[in-house]
Amino acid sequence: MDFEVKGKTCLVTGASRGIGRACAIILGKEGCPVAVNYVQREKEAEETCRLIEEAGGRAIPIRADVSRSEQVEALVGEVSEKLGSISVLVNNAGIAPMRPPEELTEAIWDETLMVNLKSAFLMTQAVLPGMRRAGWGRIVNISSNAAFTGGRVGPHYSASKAGMNGMTHSYASFYAKEGITVNSVAPASIATDMIANDLKIKEPYTPVPRFGHVDEVAETVLTFVRCGFITGQTLVINGGFYMT
Ligand code: NAP
Image (cartoon, rainbow, N blue to C red; front, side, top):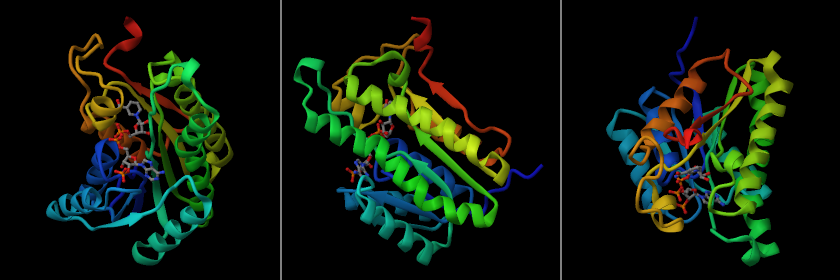
């Protein structure tokens, strides 16, 4: 059984902060060259790369709005040129503009679906040809507990993440025979900017009486990357929220 991922080129979207940064670092520590994508925060993305290099790894920051097809194409082209064909994709980039239904506009709906869901579709389509040529690939989508429970961000966010789970299962079934696995991780209440600033959640609300740590999500992502027999799964990391 081969769990070795050393040397596999990884691309993590939205890796300048939070969960994406933790995923990039854990993959970098496994000896994978990592492309650290961001959309606005260049310094934070450079810091992610510095942390990976400090741990003995190799990383490059690359700006791209992954909800735009032309930028996705350029991103995948640049990563392939600089780090090699992409073997591991973590679709993590996301936004959570909190709106109750009565305040939800078409523009917010479209933006959320584009950044959270369409981006994962565009990225997956862009990396699949290389993975199929190699006969090996790992795609991990960062979904949300809100796909199942609704959550407090609003219907747009919940729908984007539920869509991601459906997409995960569909891609997984198409490519299981070709050495490509596709899984999703559905967190809740992980201590990041999204929880503190966007959702303004100050107190833990899960049966496990604390916020989750980004490394707890990253460890799960790494398990999906290392194991070729798990595919089409969505694993919820929510501090026991379902028990409430
Ligand atoms: P975060 O701290 O707000 O970080 C979001 C990341 O996404 C940043 O790196 C940001 O880049 C990037 N990003 C946003 N829009 C982008 C775009 N159009 N193109 C490329 N990158 C983009 O969020 P987080 O809490 O780590 O969340 C990461 C993922 O986990 C999201 O998909 C989120 O929905 C999901 N999630 C989080 C929680 C939680 O409890 N934290 C729970 C459930 C699901 P810049 O820094 O350049 O802006």
